Length: 504
Image (tube, rainbow, N blue to C red; front, side):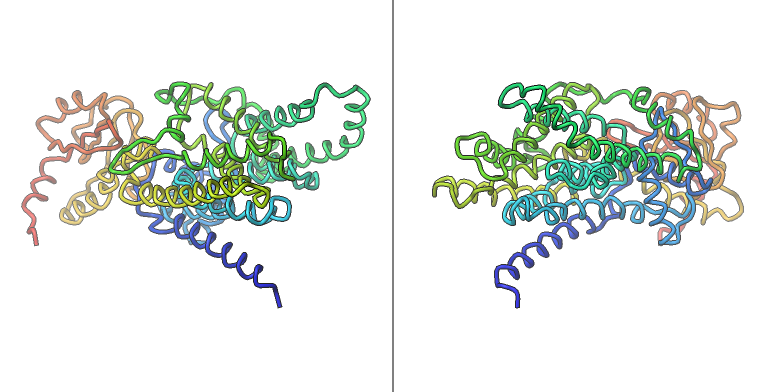
């Protein structure tokens, strides 16, 4: 029989995993689809329907998300753009988020059971990680592969495993280079922390590890190439993969000040009737650092120092880049969660006061982070007052599709199509309107606009379209995103049918 302590550990791990699954899968399809989710869905559908990768180095991220999502879509019987559903697409990041929580389990013998459990609990309950585990974007895949690569580098996993993890990062998103640079710099700083070693020592290290480095680099490149070239069927993909690091185009309107991420996590803010803060987790991470850099460091001190330096370098890099949003912080914040778990390293050797401090802050961190996750994915899931709900989609626009179908049902003798969308920045409207066969998109109003039964005008064209359709259409205001209204125009005969229908 297993010792009682093993049963307790197994219960704790099962409880943490159950909490992670619940937080990530409950009402997964309820929140309105985000514009980035909709574009990712469109890319996935195009690749599914064409049978190729179709990578665009200027504006697409890596193909791992679409490739894995295609498998889930096929499994669910959703084989085209029109058949896709939010719930199916979001299964991928939700599973990825749960696997991220389990990573410390596989390294618990190196980390220590207590540190692994605490790191997993913090990863499971983090509102940032929970929120983006419920959104069909690349970030959770990058975070999973990134944390796996970090552990592999720290504990010198076989070169093929390390290289594969880095290759999967490369195949997921071009920002993997930031992590690779941060880890490389952290390793160099630790190598030289006691001063410049003699050249003979550096040369000996290189000779000892050069085969492993070559194997890791080769496996990373082959893994990335497999995805970018669609299993080596499109060789140009690997050149585009390298090219995207230099030519990727970010959209405008996302510039943030230098202290954006510090404000997002370190400073408590009340918004939407809830408090948002990651301060207890940062305090735990700081406690781990103090022990690791102190006079009596724990056995895991070198790993702690590596992660601490990596967190600082990641934060500096993402803070210097003017383009900022909350999900870019997922991988660095996962580093912080793991680092906070290490606050329990060498716990038995701490003073009673320090033990009480760590236990109290850990309990506060777990409880407050989980409560924030419930707020972030519940009533504030698509509310701009939620700091993690970045440019959320209004429920109003997602209700448009069922309303248009009701409108069609009361007018069987005529069609509500073609539907026209005028202007730019209209995503996720193509997702909302995907079940209608005849939908067109124009950057400016076409001459025959008045003949179209349904017209949606973006803000920059709303006034001009209103004048053009003044005699033929009924204007109805809608909301697309925060600060982005959309004017819906319905042909007057259709509108009169709608208004005359029996309210019962």
